[in-house]
Amino acid sequence: MKAKTLDPVLTLSIDVGGTGIKASVLDNDGQMIAKRVRITTTYPFQPENLLDIIGQLSSQLPAYDRVSIGFPGVVRQGKVLTAPHFVSRTGPGIKLEQDEELLSLWTGFALDKAVSDLLGKPVKSANDAELQGIAVIEGIGLELVLTLGTGLGSALFYNGQVAPHLELAHHPFRKGETYNDQLGNAAFEKIGKEKWCFRVKLAIENFKILLNYDKCYIGGGNAEFLEGILDEEVTFVKNIAGILGGIKLWEEGLFPYS
Image 1 (tube, rainbow, N blue to C red):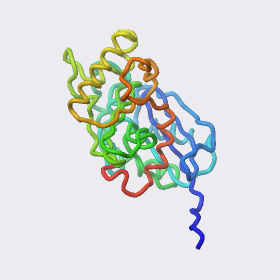
Image 2 (cartoon, one colour):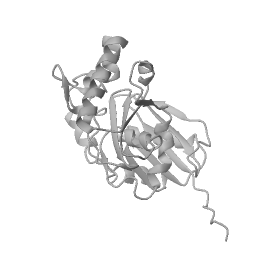
Image 3 (tube, one colour):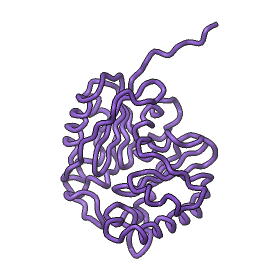
Image 4 (tube, helix red, strand yellow):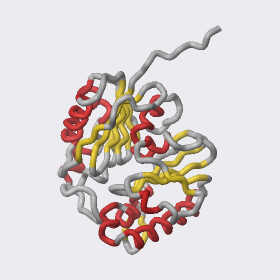
C-alpha cells in the first residue's frame, strides 16, 4: 500500500521583532518558497500598526493557507499577555517607562483573531524564541534557546516539546538591571562588544545553574559577536530560524502551552 501523500499546505510565517517584522511563505517541509520580506518597526507601536504591516507583508508574498506568528512576548491561547518591546512610546531600551495606553492596548490583545479577521486564514502564534527554537533543537532532553537582538529572548524545550514560557529576560541580573537591560542591543551599543560578551557569558553560567539544561542554542542579530568566545556546548543558529519554525507551530502536541 502506498503511503498517503499530504496535500500541499503553504504557511505564511511572520517573525515580529523590535526593529523589524519579517515574513515568508513555507511549504510542507518548512522550506521558504519566496524571498523573505521585511518592514521596519517604528514607534510608538500599537496593535493596529502590527496589523497594517502584516497586511503589507502578506500582499508581497505568494498565496498561503494559514499563518504562523512569532511574537516577542508571552502569548497564550492566541492572546498577548506581555509585549515588552511595544509598551514604551520610544521602543526598546534600558529601563524605559511603560506607557499606560500602550500597555492597555497590548495586554490581552487577541492576536490570532485579529490577524485571522484581517487575512481570512487560520492563525496560530507563539513566543518568537519558541518559534525559532523549534526549528533547530534536537528534541532530546532539556534544551535552552536564547536570542540576542533587540532584547534577550528565551525558550525551553523538553524532549522536543515547548515547556511553559519563562520570562528570563525580565528577571534581575546585575547592578539593579534585568537581563534584557544588560544584554539587549541598546546595552551592546552603549558598552561595546568586549563588556557585552562578558555579560552574556555570565548570564549563560547563571542559566546553566538555574535550569541544568542539556544543550544551549544562541541566535539573533548579535549572536555573531559571540562565536569563538563561548564554550563548545553552545550551538549557534541562523536568525532565519525565526521564520522556518512557523511550520512546526501546526504540529500536534509541540506547543501545549501556547
